[in-house]
Length: 170
Image (tube, rainbow, N blue to C red; front, side, top):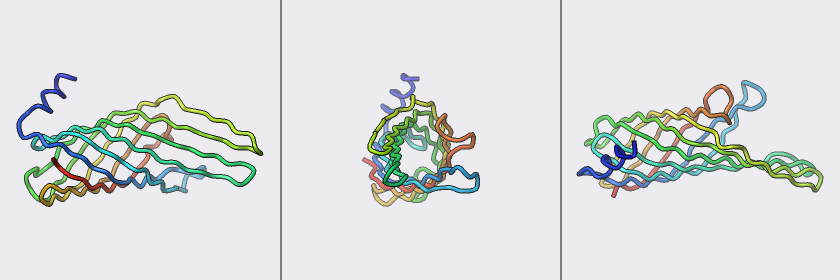
C-alpha cells in the first residue's frame, strides 16, 4: 500500500492540493427527528495526478451545552485519508467521488457545581464517502460536497454533512 502511494505521488504531472474549508455536520439529537448543525474547520493537503488524488484531511469542532450549574464541553477530531476520482479532470468544472478510512476521537469536559472531570474516548475507526463538484480558475479551486461518515462515535446511522472548501493547486 505504501509503495502504491509513493509511486502515485512521484508520477509526472503531480499537483499538490492545499484546501481549507468548513463542513456543516448534522448530528442527531436525543429525539430521532431532531438534528443539530455543527461547523468544523477543515484542512486538506494532498497530491493529484490526472483524474486521481490522495489527500489527508484534519477537522475539529467544539460544542458547549448546559447551564451555570452543569456544563458539558465536547471536542471532536477526525483524521481521514481520502482517495478521489474526478470526472473531466482537465475541464473548468469537475465532478468527483471519494472514499476514506480514518480515525475519530472525542474529548469531553464536564463541570458540575464547581467540580470538573475530563474524559477521552478511545480512537474509533471511521469510514467516509463523498460526492461533489469543483470549479477551477487558474490555480484556484473551490469545492462543494455531500458526505456520509460512519464510526463508533456516531449513531447507527452515518453522520451527514455538506462541505465547502477553497484552496490552491501548486
